Image (cartoon, rainbow, N blue to C red):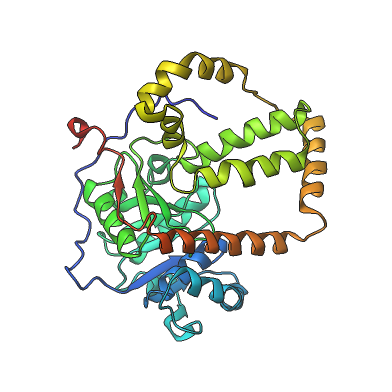
Length: 351
């Protein structure tokens, strides 16, 4: 994982992003790429009554996407109350690249996680798209400044990184590059909030963004504990599923640490546990994926998967995700959907 020494992203004034008409946003979007993430975006928009225009040159793209939507629509309905009983296939059209950018609110790029591949897609989009059409990249960790480096209208590119399954998980990480205009970022945040997403704005470009960095920090220690024989594979899985996960359902690691301080909150935790925390941090592992460790991980995965196919595991994960999100909605937890600006903690730094 790269260090965090990079400079804070600066904002280009640039031409403004298109304003959303109050009360009447355009209910049509373009998708470039219809893989797992593109299909998830399609489900998200179709469930909310949008027309979805898709460009994907793969011959099997349309059949694959429609089959995927038929397969997951039951979960989509549970994640989005009020959704139509069946997939509104008439609202999903596979079109040319030119058509996919015509009269749409914005475009989602869902290509391979590769800078050159994404830059090639942006070049196709820019051949026909209006100069103020916002392009949201679904990249999971590439630097937006690098992604937009060859664009003619770089101000309109912003990363909008969803988590899978896209139709169920509310979080979307929003991150601009050095040339991204403030108006583009604000437009993306507002648009995603209208989709009942929980967009969070990242203030700096870092590899992997935020959720992947947090996830891989836990993964690194899990691999270390497995390789060092601290616990077996199933015990590590159980520690996360039955211990860590429920405690984070309504508050993350900072809330959890504050709770450790009792009525004094975070101050109490710092006063009581700072030395112990430093000691534990210093003992965390930094495993390397040697051939031996790879073999351990492969054997561990075979154990915890227990003969299920990857498709079966994905289906179980997605069903459980929908159940958890539905529970959070039913209890009102996280129901205050809307953009979370990473700058809000430090008003003096706002631009």
